[in-house]
Length: 71
Image 1 (cartoon, rainbow, N blue to C red):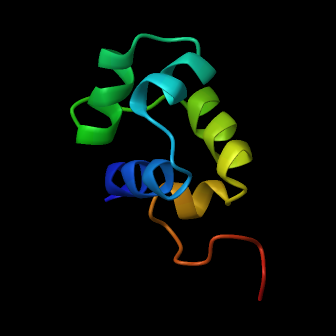
Image 2 (image 1 turned 90 degrees about the horizontal axis):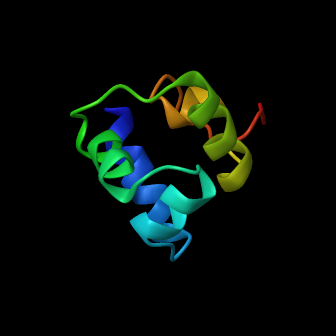
Image 3 (image 1 turned 120 degrees about the horizontal axis):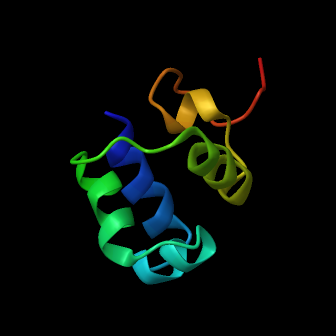
């Protein structure tokens, strides 16, 4: 599920939920709900997080296991 990828990518980047929430200009509790799968993440946030972590949106959403557009 994509929300597990949100947490994994954040932890791999040594970031806290607070840091990511600030990057997205939202409260930590809102971002926390995305990571827990309690709330659907908006498209604009998916795009910003894909840029931040240098991964494709498909990877972020669990639609692909390739992090980048490599073949």
